Image 1 (cartoon, rainbow, N blue to C red):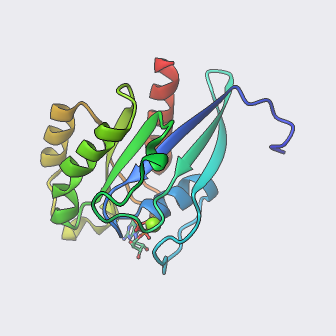
Image 2: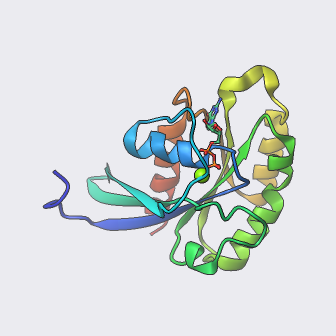
Image 3: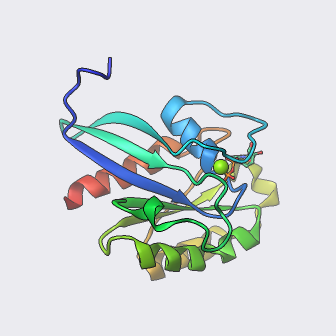
Length: 175
Ligand code: GDP
Ligand code: MG
C-alpha cells in the first residue's frame, strides 16, 4: 500500500490549456488508467497523485487539474504556486486551442518558477483524420520556446505514460 511508503520527493505538475482539450482525461488515464467517455467539465477535484520510482527514489507526482477556470486569466496564482512542471495541452483537431498556447505559456511564465519544466502536449492523436495542427508546427513552436513536445491520446492511451514519465524524469534530473 501507499500509506507506509517513504516519499523522497513530491513534484507538483500543473495542467493548463483551453477547455475540452482533454486535460482531465489525460490525468485520469495517467493516475487511474481510466477514460470517461462523457466527461463533464471538471468540478472540484484539485489534483490526483501517483507514486512512482525514478532512479531508486520514491517520487509522488501531484498533478493539478483546472476546475473549469480555463477562461483567459481565470487561473489563480495559487494554482501555479510551487509547480515544478507544467503540461500545456491543446487539442490537435482544434487549431484555436493550439493558437492559444502562446498566451497560456505567457501566463505560466508570469506565475511560475523560472526553471519550471514545460511540456507541450497535442492530445487526441487518435482522431488523425481530423488533424488541424501539423506536427511540424507544434515542433517548431516547442523548439522556439524550449519545451518538450509529445502527441498523445488519452482515449487510446498513446504516449500518456511516456509524457508524464518524461517530464517527471526531467524534473528529477534538474533538482
Ligand atoms: P478538459 O476540459 O481539458 O479537462 O477536457 P476533458 O478531459 O474533459 O475532455 C473533453 C472531451 O474530449 C471529452 O468529451 C473527452 O471524452 C474528449 N477527449 C479527451 N481526451 C481525448 C482523446 O485523447 N481522444 C478523443 N477522441 N477524445 C478525447
Ligand atoms: Mg477538465
